[in-house]
Image (tube, rainbow, N blue to C red; front, side, top):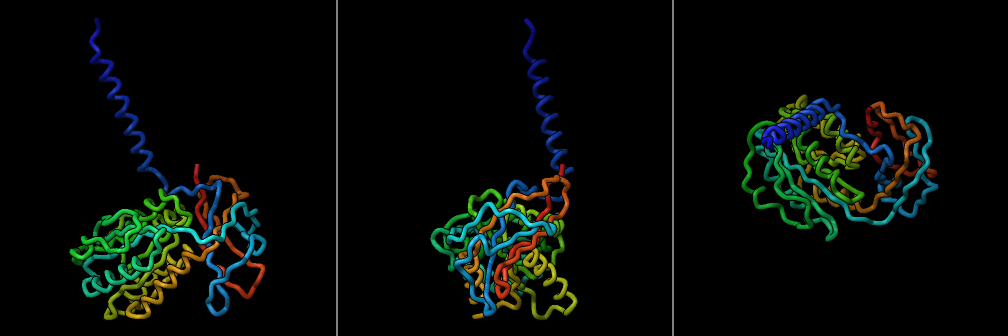
Length: 302
């Protein structure tokens, strides 16, 4: 009788080879987190000239264009639905004088969540660590109070990780709240890869500038530019110079915004899997109103 060892050894080698192929595929993957091009979902904020949220708009009030071509809207929702949020707390060395304020800001945001909303908390310095998973709790994880400021700033990696985790959540509305001085000095991921991941997860990014007021003007421009880029391209908001009542007001507005968005979906008429950027433009039937959403997505490739 032949020994079963050769067969077992062959099976082991075959599994190892398959794992190696999968690893290579992951390593060679384009710097794009795949968007499900079968349905592109937009979370849209509509305000009037005074900044008040506008309700009672219908499907007919919106026109969606992709690369200049009008698209047929197949999903339209206006109900107030729960959302999932990822809070990213910068604990790098450059945050030494601002970490207490950043923690207080995270607490204020958590306290404003509704019972049906969930949030996860992360911190990042040279690496990214999740302090608490998505849950309805309103308290900052105890570990967050023990953290000191150290290391470099892996901002892009933090956004990328949060986006990947949010992509697994069932909520239609998702947000990434970044509390950082904005100066990335460590990430392996590029800003483009992190942003594409957020767009693929249908997550809106809200950034709060925690930069030290003593930072020179050139450094501040570079830092705030990174934060503004994430907010503007995802349809979110950039909050400058937080503190006191201004920060409370900003978070209240963000929470209100997340609770008062229109959700619009369409199946792109351009089905090419070419990995190219698809520019999105949203038009309203009432020109006196303002609509804010993400400005595009990257199509799948291959």
